Amino acid sequence: MRTGVIVAAHPGVEDLAVRAEELGLHSFWVYDTPMVHGDPFVALSLCAKATHRIRLGIGVTSPALRSAPAAASGLASLNALAPGRIICGVGTGNTARRTLGMRPATAARLENFTTALQDLCAGRSTEYREGDRVRDIRFLHTGAHVNTADPIEFVVAALQGPKAAAVAGRRGTGLISFGLLDPTAWHALHDARRHAAQATPHDPDSHMDSRADSYVITSLHLLEEDEDPHGDPARDATGHLVMSLLAFAADTPAFAEQLGPEEGEAVRRLLDRRGTTATAPDRHTKLYPNYLGRIAPQDRDLILPSLMNTLALVGTRDDLLTRITALEQAGIDELLIQPVIDPPTEMAQLAKLLT
View 1 (cartoon, one colour):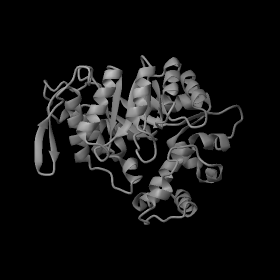
View 2 (cartoon, helix red, strand yellow; view 1 turned 90 degrees about the vertical axis):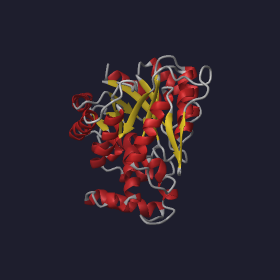
View 3 (cartoon, rainbow, N blue to C red; view 1 turned 135 degrees about the vertical axis):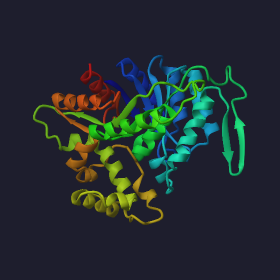
């Protein structure tokens, strides 16, 4: 299985990209969460100039965040800096919208956005709509401005399950998901993508990228001899994933109701600790600061073993390889980790584990 890394955009991120390339990792991604992290296009521009081989990804942008012309311009500009090395993840903006106190985009809007980006980034015209006005648009200048000749890889975020997988199938893209380590769930997503692709007639002149790889984002903690799999080091290494789920549950009562008693109690404690409620209009300002950052020691009690085991890879070398093999057999092409404790060391650990 290939390996990669995903981080929050910040100054100096290019140094991590260089180190990832030196370690032989396949890809380097940054999040697109405007009110929480830095800008991915700025960060990846620095990475593009500092690296030569590693693929560079945005995980993920959304029609609820950026217009298709603006996003396509950013992507094609990155493609001019790193020809053929750009990956664009697209999604409904689940977290990025919730950090604004807003709802994500619909699957239909996601599909229209993906179509427009594929067309524009390949140098084709596409239909663009604002209200009742519809126009065909295309890049009016290419050459030194943007690169529409080298292909950009597109992947759809599978947070909406079969709906998103169907979009990927119809648009001929890959999939990306966050903390989804259940091989059975991946088999279902791949089935949904395949069925949608088979039911969709594709224009042979569309030149859609035939690549349809699957990526999963998680965190990894290799246990030392006799180390507690749920001790503080393991909780610190995986806690950002668990806290992301708890924050989503605290923000989404319907999802919280599906959790077990222990997980539901953790959600209630989180709300109390942040001084908000599941229905407060400003709850997004209390739940999402430091989103996907290293957890505070006082929040370690919220990092439940059940959620660590569901969302992250923690175990001995043999344990990890067994779980990774099962994911590979379920069709996962690349494992992306988000390091938060010591990124260079964690990246080296990942590279060593799978070589």
